[in-house]
Image 1 (cartoon, helix red, strand yellow):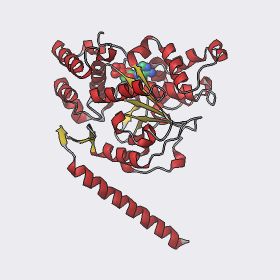
Image 2 (spheres, rainbow, N blue to C red; image 1 turned 30 degrees about the vertical axis):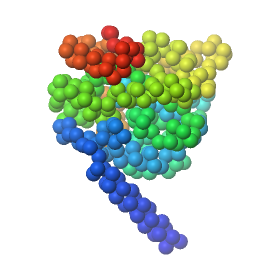
Image 3 (cartoon, rainbow, N blue to C red; image 1 turned 180 degrees about the vertical axis):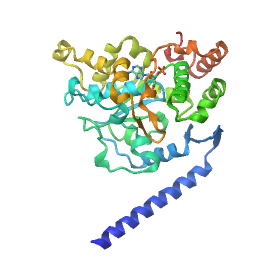
Image 4 (cartoon, rainbow, N blue to C red; image 1 turned 60 degrees about the horizontal axis):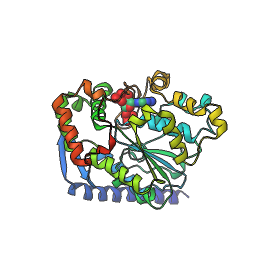
Length: 339
Ligand code: A3P
């Protein structure tokens, strides 16, 4: 028995070592770019820090999606926390009625973990039976990864659903810089001027960038396969939350029944997940998560559309707008860039 345990642990160690070697072999060959003290490597067209990339490769290699899984995807600062909360509340509403929702006592990022940043953090391999961390009706996962980087198990070989939330990049960038200042976990980036961070954002060399290919990947996939990918806009979600929440429920195969509508369940979910409500819950005032020690309190700021106009100079806005025209065409994917 003891011998068997020892053999198992040796083979696990060897497997880990060979994965480390494989990672290293790949990593040395990737193009690199430095941003202050951070080194980014380009993988499949997107930029990542080494420790994030380790998680990505482990996720790609070991994760097995199930047909009932839900993956929520965003660029950082596009409204991930909101999307996680809404998706969790919608998909689990029969198990967790609003008054008993785990969202009242836990941050949305504790209930819907990121695949590459939490579950497969820095290359660790979780027990496949432990992935439903919140014990919900369905497994829900988060990712900041571009569509182009997702593994086949998510894209092709399972029927899992993907919800993508897109936000006007001008507001994403504005939120991003405030987050560096507020969170305290990125002192080197907070030290940089708005202009320096802006250059990296426009060059696409920020973590998970470039934003244009990120948005394009999900947009094109949603047009090609609308039953698989639902493309949502933060601005639309703000303007008409009710329609969007209903659309999300339909897409997930759990539309609201007439009785639920009469009982105002949709409104209850919207209120539960609102910025005001989440921000003021004790569980979101303290605590942090993940390898970047993201403080829960730093995830809730203003949540306004067009806040960029208060911070970006006209020439910065012009540069980003013309970049978007160049990348997306005149339609700009209707990103609602006017404040
Ligand atoms: P601002 O910095 O513009 O206020 P992410 O969750 O991807 O990190 O994005 C954070 C942004 O989403 C912040 O934007 C934050 O205020 C906003 N946000 C967080 N929770 C929200 C909610 N429940 N409703 C609307 N916006 C929310």
